[in-house]
Length: 306
Image (cartoon, rainbow, N blue to C red; front, side, top):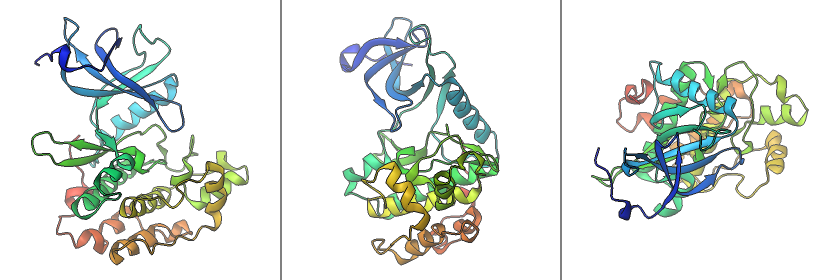
């Protein structure tokens, strides 16, 4: 690996992680819930110089949550259907002498998450970008369900854009499996804009801890995700968490802003109030929106290597 010149990396902070194995760069960015941080990093040469492409390090004092996320990545990557998730380098149960109270997850670095990326390409995804992003999300959900996990946090912030420096093209990868739990078990947390009406009702009734996760939870989230990437706005943009949660039990989505009637039909099916009326992932894969693309369903039903 060729060491980079320190002159070309002006954003190095001078701090390290992993007992000097990684050099931190730029500012740390807090997650939406404030429970973790992401920062750019480089592998360190024996001489303390940055090497290779920039990486991302997620660090958090919640060691159990970080262990769960790493275990979920390991579980899905060992399955037959591996999805399209971010590449991971290593898990640091203790992020080194520099941060003994933190755990760290070292992984591939994206240029932006999908929510931040859309304003850069006209405010929404269209054409091949829209299809590729939707397929990536479907691959990820299918891979998690294949190993009996419910994502419970599918949203545009949890997909990052990977840029191919040679071609200038982009691809998408799923991230943040911290909240994934086994089907039929209660969730450990929730994101209001990704949760379905049935969970919102349980939460408002004080019964969230006894709620049983089903795969239909992610199907609802997938519908919300599709609507946002197709229009550039989520149904609840600008709403507080409390307002979203209270709105969901009676929420009737208006999908008129989705220009493609075939995609609008798929979104409407995913956003059925009754979870039993929502399609399975395999049914979604056979929907005309995907079937009419000419892509072989097995390209995404059986995933890609991680």
